Amino acid sequence: MEAEKAAERDWSSLAPELLNLIAKNLSEISDFIRFRAVCTPWRLSTPITDLPPQFPWILERRAYPFEPHMHFYSTTSSKMYAFHDPKFMGQRVFGTSQGHMLSEFCAQTTNQASTSHDTVHTYQFSLFNPLNNHEITLPACDFGLYSYSYWIGPQQYQIGEYVVRGGYFNHRGYQLAFCCLGQDNWCKFNSENYCDGCPDFGLFHIKRMLFRVDHATGVTYVFDLTTGNLAYVLPSVKDPVENYYLVDASGHILIVFQCFDASDDLYDYCFHIYRLDFSGSSSPHWVKVNNIGNHALFIDLDGGFALEASSFVGIKANCIYYIEQCSWVKRIDIETGNKELLQCPFKEPERWFVPNLRHLQAQ
Image (tube, rainbow, N blue to C red; front, side, top):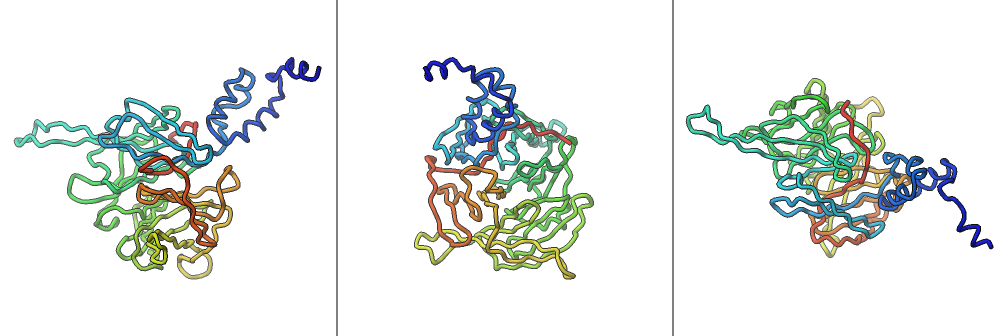
């Protein structure tokens, strides 16, 4: 009798607040989508924008000349996701922010006004979400991304104002450019302000300030994005190392130094973390930290970001998750230094991607 009563229950009549509570505990995007597909009341009770925080996926490195599909892997569910779209063909993809990536497409035309008929390169950029095909077209320009430069968009789960990127300008040298979402032009920094040389991993912006780490010296230059002027200079706290990453951890600015760990039999990486300190009467300076509390850092060749571990299923606090030169995916405990190899089926994992179904709105 009890079984018959259970079979006769109308599960679609569950209270909306109960459905919402269940949906918030679906930490895998495929489960969330299946939940919404059960019936109309369940779908209406859980808007697509209410996707629970997702553990970052791993994006597989795309083969040149950039195939029309992307493969992602979820380490928490051991599931692989494939997205196919013809617009991916021939497009380079950089970074990830709030579920959106930056794509670059280069169009070549011949300058008929020139006696030598020089080739003119026009670069078109867009922010796009591969999960829902939402796209924001950015202004076209005459400079493209250098092979190893990267972009910084709005930070994770917080709409930002700027898209910032290292660029190669008119084949004359490296510069930095940025634009506000919704505007029709790019703004370029002076080469004197940017410091000549190849763009590196030390670019970061927060609260209309741009941080740029000189890879050779470790000195950090901080610029006001509104004026383009140099605001202050932070002295180096570490000898030149392999890479630098600047990360926003709930308003705290962290600089992460990545270097080779000679004590490791596998010649692996180790990390040193410093926090920008504005306290006291002295100028802003870096302070070394050995604990980042409830946060976890995710680092790849494009840069890094921080997430609050308690908001995500499967994330361990006070750890660094990093992709090592498109080969291994590892987690290191900041306090103990213990390292763990994470499962990944890709031969060449490339970067972290936080799945998101929201639309990014220009401000």
